[in-house]
Image (cartoon, rainbow, N blue to C red; front, side, top):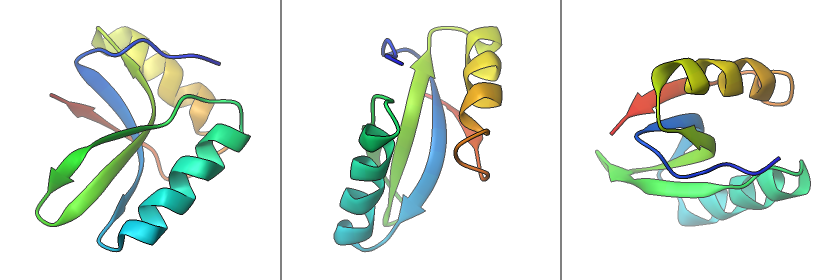
Length: 77
């Protein structure tokens, strides 16, 4: 499943250790999704498994991604 960069990111993890962020990026890729390191906020790398240009699209993706990753939330940027 591919994702188009947008203003809404479906975050599946936030990591202080760079190796843990890299491990999550690899896990997202192996699940067939497009991983994105959205950036570092408060010393935590925010890792997304998808993105959308509108909230409704982000909600739809988050619902799908929740089947693979249980802790999912949407970041508006």
